[in-house]
Length: 272
Ligand SMILES: [Zn+2]
Image 1 (cartoon, rainbow, N blue to C red):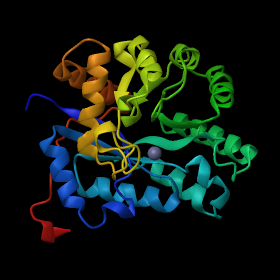
Image 2 (cartoon, rainbow, N blue to C red):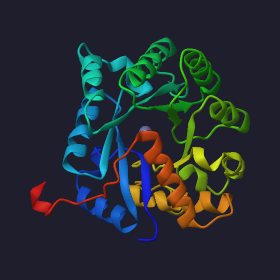
Image 3 (cartoon, protein in one colour):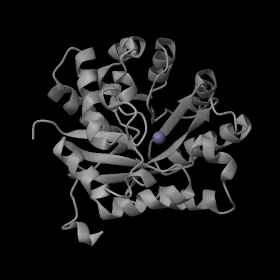
């Protein structure tokens, strides 16, 4: 296969994939996706993505509590995340970060959770995955503070910040992952930022079922469509799709220390 893509951020345990999960994986494999990272947003979904990663060699798990869910953490939830973090199929911690858009979760709770995720990521030696929505200054503040004790190993997921934010994230050692938002017709500003990112810090993702790329906008997103973002990023950097696929896949494997396993489907749909 010419291209080997890694979707570094998606939510395959989401209800919206319940009906046709095998078909979704089949289309991803056909599009060249060899591996995907299934991201937890709560203790329950973190458990669910670990189960998926146990069943499919091409799915790796990332566990944590999304900033918009930090107010729902119940006793025992954080301990469960900590335990799952050491599971061999878990390759990262998150998604964590700060979200100042919905305004329904107090920021101090989110700060506390973000810092805990970074500490956990260091303890278990796995990178952390950052969600940042309308909170760039605040996220940078936490990252800067954390970088004072040790180098950062993490990714800004679905990066959509400006050039200054990108530059500081890169200086702090972070990877930047681009989603379907990069393909939006009116997103020249983001493409200009993406063009400045060094090749060895680029990652691609879908954030499926959210953020479908331009040609599928409004539909449920799925991992196969990470190819659209890869093509767009390739164009932005003036290179072939195949080369960008190789670059982003090598980066994903390096950051998350992924095994090179293919997105194997189970023997039959009945097996599920
Ligand atoms: Zn996400």
